[in-house]
Amino acid sequence: LTIFLGIWQLQRLEWKEKLIAEFNELKDQKPLSLSMGKMKYPNIDEFTKVITLGTVDRRKKIFFPAKTLNGISGVRIASLLTDNHGNNYLIDEGWFEQNRYNYFKDNKDIFKTEILGYIRYPTQKKMFTPENSISSNEWYYYDLEQIQTFLNVKINQKFFIKNMSNYAENFLIPSSQNHNFSNNHLQYAITWFLMSFSFLIIFIIYLFRKKK
Image 1 (cartoon, rainbow, N blue to C red):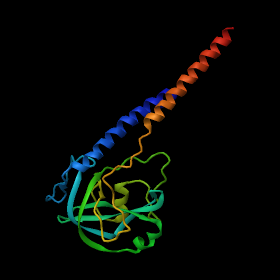
Image 2: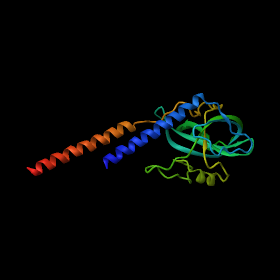
Image 3: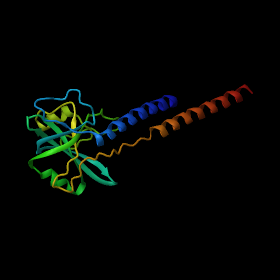
Image 4: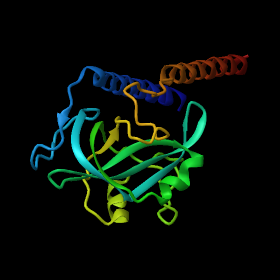
């Protein structure tokens, strides 16, 4: 079992390094226009930088609680974004401190702005991730089909957008081009392999003593 866990961590290491490499390409990447007619970008890569002139509608929004930034507890807000061709997307607008929650909860603003951001694909719910609480509008993972039903509007089901643009609200912090992915999989793999080696030594000692 421990050998299997070590191999799994090495696979996770390879996946995470690829993820970080793709993210780092953002800095040198020219943004694609998200508003090129009815183009849906069926094969668009994750972390592709995009730009569009669109309308953000905070009447249709969701919240991701328990998110920390620099050790401070806060919340992320994601709202409906409609580009100038009528295509709807979910946009992660950014992070704010917990004490600003009522401001954004009561905020019904609709505003037109230029959005610079990047593409993210939803990931599968992890084993210990809580279920989304639709009744309290608290979300813990991106389920675009579930979010579409909650917002009662059709949105792009393949990806959502992480906003990198600064708004007039200086207490809303957009996503950064610098990744914050943790990458401790090599240490975890070494730990599991050392445990496997230790168990092997213990087993050999046990067999040796048993023969005596």
